[in-house]
Image (cartoon, rainbow, N blue to C red; front, side, top):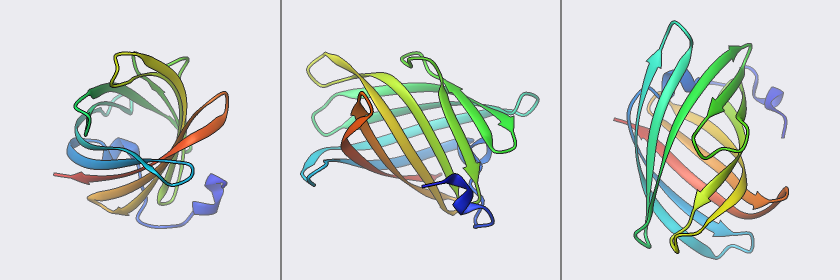
Amino acid sequence: MAIDAFAGTTPVFLPEQFFVGRLEGWAVVESLVGGLLKRATITAHGELDADTDTVVLTETYTFDDGHSDTLRWTIHKLGDGQYTGHENRLEGEATGEQAGCAFHWKYTRDTPQSDGKSFKLNFDDWFYGIDDRACIVRGSAGRAGIPFATAHVTYRKL
């Protein structure tokens, strides 16, 4: 799927607007064959530094097996629909592109698991703006470029 396919669609999804303030969310993670792997609730809060077009977003996933994972993102708008991001468990940096109602976000992260181990996973997330208070995300996670799980996430601004 190409980001350009979303040019002109509305509502326009801009991370530097949507991720500012308090958010809540819910997620389900499925195996590629459709079996439910885990569920999570999400709490998040973002602040914008308008001078640098940078959002600092902290989001905590609390999974149904009791473990949690907190991500502390710094998302910087480069201009012309291009973004970069940093987070303390990333390998390299995240890259993003935005057009119309869509935002495409890719990164590799050392991701903690419920057994105390962690795995480097490649994430490929597509955010779709629904209205000014909601978005839906379809993401995939895998290793070595091979996806093995799909996540469906909904965020709502509070």
